[in-house]
Image (cartoon, rainbow, N blue to C red; front, side, top):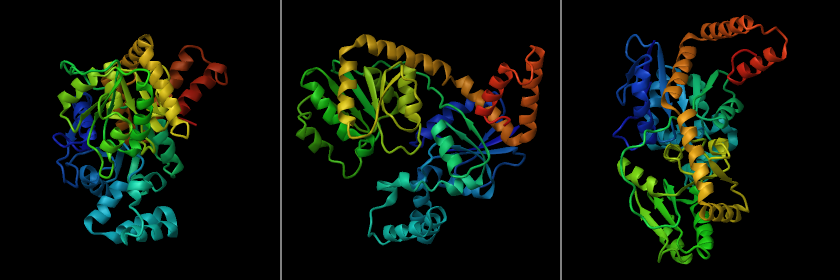
Length: 412
């Protein structure tokens, strides 16, 4: 089976580029993989299956959707909300009519009118303030012959949007932990949050909670790593909460090795966001690999994390109070931090193991390339194995097997 991979690759500053580069060597041990050169719109001759990694960044993924339009194939859907991608491929290419058509195609006349409002600058860009209400994933779903998602959440959103093809859930792979020493930072304990600093990452709520916890625990510190989004006045917020004079360590965009060194220095990782675009967090996966306890928002993929590795905070009116309770618990109980960290490390070793993930990918590739014939053969093998161990049709064991097959969309 020859597979053509369309994906951003390093040195692009893209989490999906890092992800694809990490996965590529183990995929090549299992099938014939060709990485398509950036900007190419056609797969190499002799390709059995085209695989398109699609995320919400138009600079990284616009050319990939262009190629998907020419040759449909399996889509690895890293984000469900693709509004920013569509805006970049239409408005960003001076094709306002294309943006209006996309809005009308998926959201009717009201969508088109809202699109006019954006183009006329009468309302703020929808991809900035209401992307979750207008995901604009329809075209990508219509072109995909099969999907790979990293979460049940994205699978269910795709089904609700009308996608009827095969969907395989493949966990995000864990990253190997490099041999770099942690940065020497103050904090008892040190909480860390990684990624763009903005409102959607719930930074205002997190800072307010930290300021309240620091009143009883002045040794507590927060490490903020990532670029500050335009219009988000971080310095003013820190000053208002009294966090500017101490308790806050600030880093902008950092290279990979330094990122790992900073992540190792933290006792707890905080990874909040709402609304969710359906993304899986690469920094949260790194935290699992490091054996770090997590505090996350109770949304999307994050809500699917086991309770023993992550404290989950609903993004509602009680969010700050819940954050205060979570931070106080983890600050006061190193034994809880240790237990959560060990559970996180075990999760990375099992569900997010690189070889396990690669095997799931190859199964998804085979089913996408071979269609019903592959599914029938799998069902036949399972049925024969059940008969061999004496499982009777209609028995409790047979129904249990049928239920498990249905979970992975084999059989009905």
